[in-house]
Length: 146
Image (cartoon, rainbow, N blue to C red; front, side, top):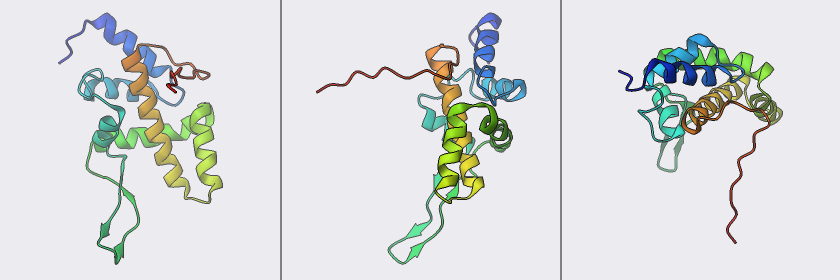
């Protein structure tokens, strides 16, 4: 299944586990289900695979349903990420800020937890692709073209 050696898998697992909120079981499951994050080209593809993206139910101009999460995806991964989001709200600064910002807008707490799940998955994807260990104070250095 994996084309890398065991040393690289252990290193990748250590990096993914370094994210506050993601534990050993979730880290292993992420590596197994994504083939070490090689199956996906973008974080949005991974979020769709996990089934934590939103789906807007709309038909024309008269029927406007409430946005819900897409349940099409890996249920086991979605459940583990949802449970990890509780710890991430306590210990992960970026996730806590996101959760507090959504709750302050008087949105539901469940919606905020799903946003935290999405954030955790995107953090794990970024760490796996960049091969840079988790740093809570990391800021990307984008070059601004004027």
